[in-house]
Image 1 (spheres, rainbow, N blue to C red):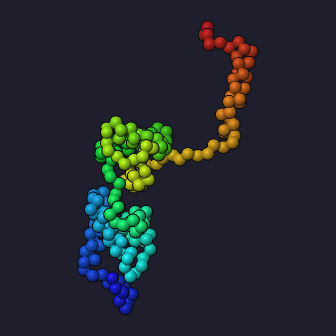
Image 2 (cartoon, one colour):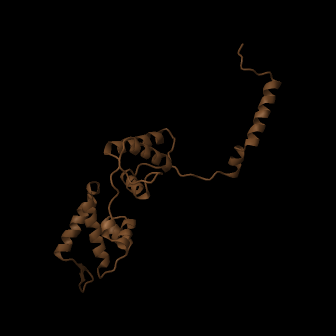
Length: 194
């Protein structure tokens, strides 16, 4: 790349072809293969090494690569950078998404921990090879899953207020039941119907 006198960037024909290929890959990201992804990362690394000295964030955004992936490639080299391997078949992933959406419709919000448990059950029951730890998919897998299914949302754990936790205190619960027993005895309430 060279800057001319009018401060515009001049790109040679080979680099332009590569950039067009990369933009094609980005437009049809659903069909990206590991090879295409490597090409995109390689082009991004060349851009970073160039004389213009762009930021990692800007370059990652330009080429449609996650910032974390690009930083990993800069630190560890290109050969270790791949997209997460496909663990669930398209059908299984669709079933998982439908399950999550149904639970949302029923207003029973799932957490990522709940979904991790479901994924591990699917993987173990179907004897799929996977690279997950015992607790389930890692952040990289989740990032790709959420990018593919942006209409999903998951609950996060929230701290309980002090008043709410006191309601669940066993001593308070026992006291409430004692008061209930007194009321039942006082009014001679029984489970028998007339």
